[in-house]
Length: 372
Image (cartoon, rainbow, N blue to C red; front, top):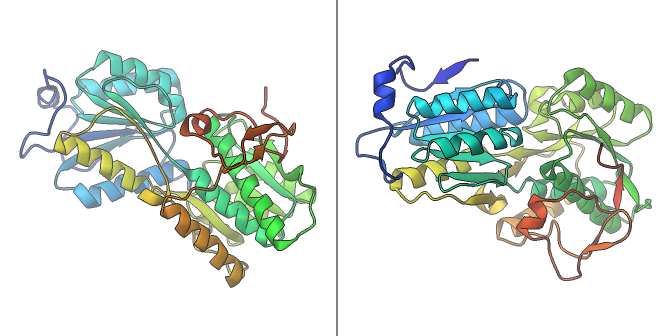
């Protein structure tokens, strides 16, 4: 386990750390005292995807509030038992605010938060809360919808997606991309099989470089005209490029990590989320809540379009993005049917946050199923 710090304060100074523990309920930060913030990361910060995006958010936080916070992060905390130990140690050492940055941290952080009621916790992509434990996620499905819309406008009708784990976050991303793809195909009048425009293959892991590469190569070899990456690295996008098939990246801008053929990438912008949470703690206004934001709050982004994306297509995509940023989210606007043809979202309706955060069914247009 490696610790990184933003201030020269040694973790071995136990007396100082224990002093930071408050005996009362969490309130405004004492004047002149830096807020101590810890981030527990799933893997290393150089994965070029999920964890790199979180690290970028941490750096943004330090740049914005560096004189008010002392920030640490711990890498490669994947095992639930390990996560519980690390989270508990952070709380014992007097951190005021602790972030668990992956779905798999949910049970450990929920347990540890119950043991330390005067420490604030935030968990990414989960759904369990306590008075001192909130959750946060960004509406990456908005960016997914736009990436799919772009692909459809360009006539891609046989997409292959390298999916990671069968949880709602991943499923709704696949669904949003597919719905956007179908919209774009309709507008571009591209002939297509509406039941099979996006084929899913499962990595069954957040990160597995060899498997990501192998799955992307398999999709390219079997005739898929576009590879959609969803893993914590850019390896599947890079593999697609090597095979001469365009890609769409995920998490960070895949072009930066060798995927020159990427048409765009859907990007997590955690910095704004982290700044808002920390500002609330500093002001004494923080409360346990389920933070769920998108383009309107700067939580997500689309990477710059590749040279292969026509200007007219880019303009259409950016027009929809502007609407989303203004609060008009059409990513799951009805009617929406599942693979069996059953209407899940009615005409003139839209998916609720509860439905999005618990989504475990695929829309019509997805070829594949949830792994057992």
